[in-house]
Length: 92
Image 1: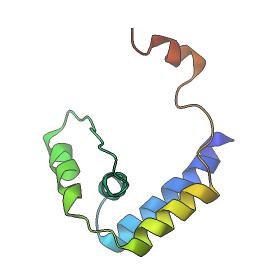
Image 2: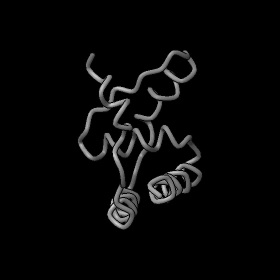
Image 3: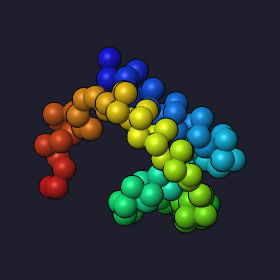
Image 4: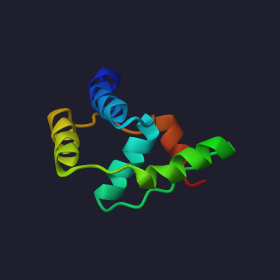
């Protein structure tokens, strides 16, 4: 059950977002940026663009980052991102 294993990771991000007073998306984008990765999220809604952009204002402490890394390490993401059928269509 990949869904339930991966949901554990999302629950940790949700808890951190609640503590920070922001959305899960914002804390996820802030964490990815703190890891030195540039994310380019897509959206079709202006309010989501504002939400994504404001993720740069989320400050994650060293402890926050360690907590998220530990959560991911404890619950390694499982399964492929796309089904076999969907992966055939990627890049076409």
